[in-house]
Image (cartoon, rainbow, N blue to C red; front, side, top):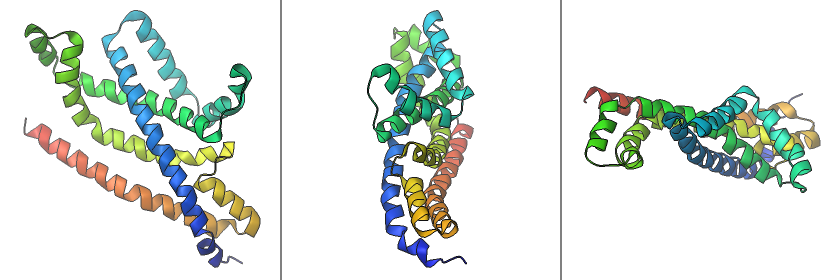
Length: 221
């Protein structure tokens, strides 16, 4: 018989794990934005060697499951570097690299959506390529890519559950531990799902709001 009281008993522990979940998602997205911006710029600029390296990185990350990447970094990387990473560090590296690959495509699409004439006009005023990109193109591109970046954060927030496979004490891992102790998986996992829902619903609403604002702004141009 399902005992729902167990879910409320373990709620404080789940919320403790939620803090780790949010920290991991925020750091992962931050790293992803930094990596993705750099890789996106490289793929737009198309400098031959850098472009090929960036493309290989994007294709490998996007073509393999995040779970496999996480396991390789946590269990495989120590055999190369000689020491084992902490679970949080391994998860952070995995989520940063994974988010960076997807964010690079978002950034690349945002840059390419800007009229090429703006780059030409900036260059005709004496700006270098990088000055024009930094001061003219990127600010407009980031305005357009804010909604998909918000979606990327929502996806990454939910994917942090994979970190439980490397024993990181985030929400799902704590839920698994409590389930093993109580023998009541259903109410505990329902409570975990509700916590994810509480976190993602406001974010989804915010993304939709941004999409409406960006759409209205583009129509006014």
